[in-house]
Image (cartoon, rainbow, N blue to C red; front, side, top):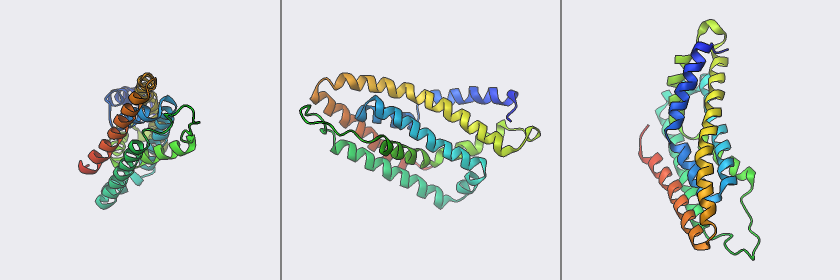
Length: 209
């Protein structure tokens, strides 16, 4: 169990980090512009599950091994970047899908969106570095197994992360709903959303860890 005197500062620290828009926020906003609020919420939850997977990996020691292996770190980063670029291009290619209201739209299935978002959450090695550096500062060997303390910190961070990202995503989704009143405006906003996802992938590929 994480001692209260460590947990409260960690929560405050998490609020500060989460309040600063990062790649996960940009991804959620971009998906909201392309898919609307439903897609945005699924994206936020899926990305959070992926980040939680990283936190659990750090808790059991895999994070240190991944961080120490430069080739593996770059492989994960470039794989995630390539996937984001694919999603961005795909969003732009399908920006006109569903504009004809006389034809029933076939929205992406929730499971598909969730899987895509989990992959994005898992494939950001910078988060592993962050957890590896931060978690040890908030655990106490006198309060039980370190692994379970780190797992607790991971769940706390992801909970607040999902909550914070959801606010940005819902706001973007609401703006997108206004654009959806005009087919041409919706094409524009989908193009912007897809371009943002594509740009995020390019930045991820080019900016070293």
